[in-house]
Length: 192
Image 1 (cartoon, rainbow, N blue to C red):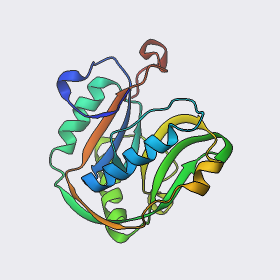
Image 2: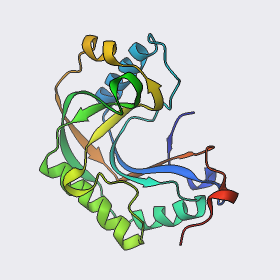
Image 3: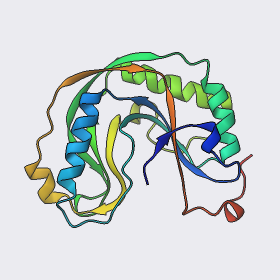
Image 4: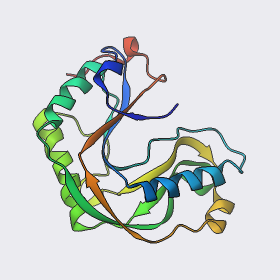
């Protein structure tokens, strides 16, 4: 199932959504992500999530739909931003023999740190609990190619070349959200 940007009419109040605050990427970067996905399909792998290509600023956890709607309202006043990015090769989370996420590395820079800080400030104003340890100086900018997988990418890492190019990201801060079927809203409880 593909992740999509937030649309209030598609959100169910009592469903939990895997959610992130992101910046859109230009079509040239989307093309790179799609090319990498095609190459990954040649491997034997556990199918993961193919996310709408975006640069992750802040993972927001698994809020309920009604919380997402409130967060979208809080996000409204945040203006668009323009940042420069430099792709810095292919990366992964987890060991290369069982990667849980394959992504394009993005070299950190002052513009990305400022956009990440704006996301943290929004979360703080909203009273949103921190869902990851990768904040502030530990923030790791990336563009996911595939998520929630269990993939041996050792051979793939050696044969794939990612163009180390500069791109401009210009656009609004966006929420991306996907229903998380792994979490039962009745048993997960509500946050305070």
